[in-house]
Image (cartoon, rainbow, N blue to C red; front, top):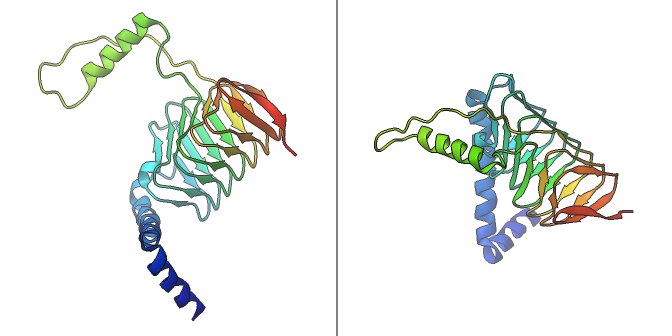
Length: 223
């Protein structure tokens, strides 16, 4: 009786919330079903009771790339976890990933109970050269190789350049605030908080750090 009363109150006061909850639940079930057919379990290893809302949450773009997600984790619709080349991404158990991009060409190791807010990015490599000349050639090649073509294809030779990369390590119980960015070579200790809009360009931070700013710095040690 109490449950029915609660549902009636939600229907009266927050009907769109109920629809949103129903949609989210359907996405979890649909993704689980599709995952049996379209997720490569050798490259993408999901622990017990990992719940995700889209098979597009995961991309391991080569045979050597690996993504490991710990048991009991929740991955929402807009999260994107990409491992390229020989990259390895490891996410600890009971983590909650919202609107986050995790992009690796080296290694990203994350502890248990990671909590992310909106529009968060972790990237352990630089995707484009800082040299104007090299970057021009790279973008020219990207444009020429893009499909579909609606005219003659431009022939552009590939450039000899490898993205600089350095692993990222994050401890247990870390909270990443909205719009924060974590870049290559960053190490964050357990129990830390990265404030909203912080840009962490590298370096090591001890346990229970409050990290804020652009470029980010240690503000204080949390209790």
